[in-house]
Picture 1 (cartoon, rainbow, N blue to C red):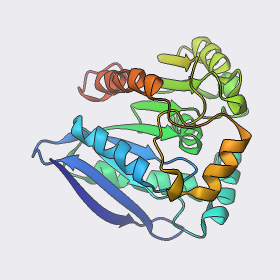
Picture 2 (picture 1 turned 90 degrees about the vertical axis):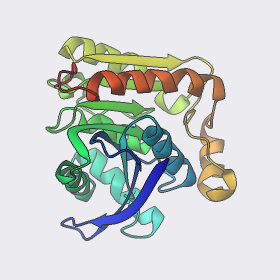
Picture 3 (picture 1 turned 135 degrees about the vertical axis):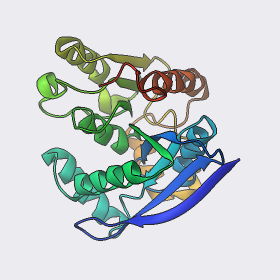
Picture 4 (picture 1 turned 180 degrees about the vertical axis):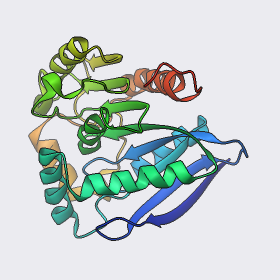
Length: 247
């Protein structure tokens, strides 16, 4: 059984709403901070968190688009990603510290992100306090060739049919090879953007329509079914034991 709770975390920019999903086990669990995609808090991201909770993780979902109107938040978030600084990062650090204080967390924290969240997750990899990053179809930072030095382990998943990120998987793989970061980069030949996210188009009709016109996007069951065991194996290796092979 998955237990769900809602709370807010104090940040320098005001309260940040957070939803938490975990099993009803009394044991302390490793945590995974789940960063939503461009659709924000949605049925899909709650489904992702429930899946993680069912597999033994404390899944923590901040709503980074709750501070203002959606488009205002998206524009602000994109600026923060470009600068690698700002209220987005202040919020993430506040969430990480909140998770660390929870008695039901083992102290080992991973990050999983999708689309916008995948880009954000990659930026977290070299920062202190994280033990694993699973970035799904995330953009690379400008200084990606050297940015990831000293990072925690990274699992990055891409769709080869995603025109917006053409060549990104190979670039990231080469950069992580060069910097010696433990990593796996997978590019699924038949998948486009967002292949792990099973959104209902009726929930976000305008954004869904725009993205659908710009690039091949949407849930791709065969790729998602292959990816999910890979994600769980990666998180298990990095988070489930104090002697895991993460930094």
